[in-house]
Image (tube, rainbow, N blue to C red):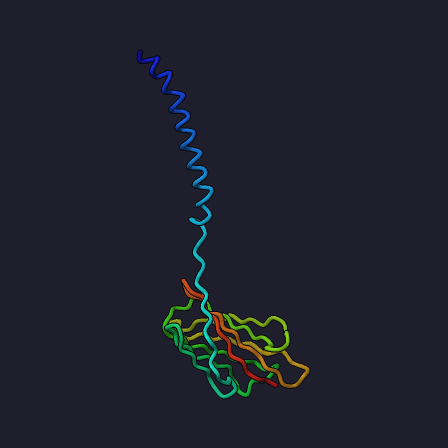
Length: 161
């Protein structure tokens, strides 16, 4: 009687095992991408302050962070080396990028990775503006600041010759 019972339960056990394996395969296929894909950092756009980089540093305080950004020397001019300085408090930044763009006219890509100094609250870099044939031009200094779980972005418009 034992061998007869084993003969009847063996097909059911195999079917149960196959069903369990199929369920595991389906669950893995559906959920594996979310398990292995890191969470995207939250993007936060900071409202740019009304200021003029030609008159000195611009300050911004929002979303729990405070930053001060400057381009020197002033007045800001095309084809001259510009030194960028960013001081930030309230968050630990892992990467800071400065993009200089024509506000009203496409002037190509001009991105600079800023380098952290000291304790990571000060970031420095250097770049230069392309020359514009119109004489004066409004530029946009766009900052992208990446922390572990957030990406902050803001910009500062300024005029250059």
